[in-house]
Image (cartoon, rainbow, N blue to C red):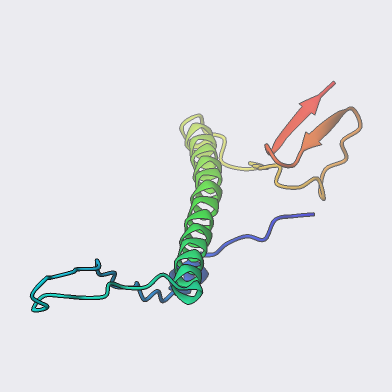
Length: 124
């Protein structure tokens, strides 16, 4: 199954709201002037921490997936640019075809295999 591609507008729109708890220490002042009971630990506050951590990891994972995909796109663009540059400087300006092997839909592979995850073709 193909992984869903993350697009930049979706990534930029993915802003999560997190309201942190302001924790206060318990202070016992013998004179009672500066006493404070401290912030109690509750399931609600613990769940707030868990949800904030989960959202931060989700966003980080989505950013990493986007950057990895962009690295692949940049490699393909660089290869296409180098091929076009080489063909123009050598006078070959027609019948140029570049295949990035994202899928095998247009290719009849008779001897070899296609590694979808690493985006490689192995010929035998």
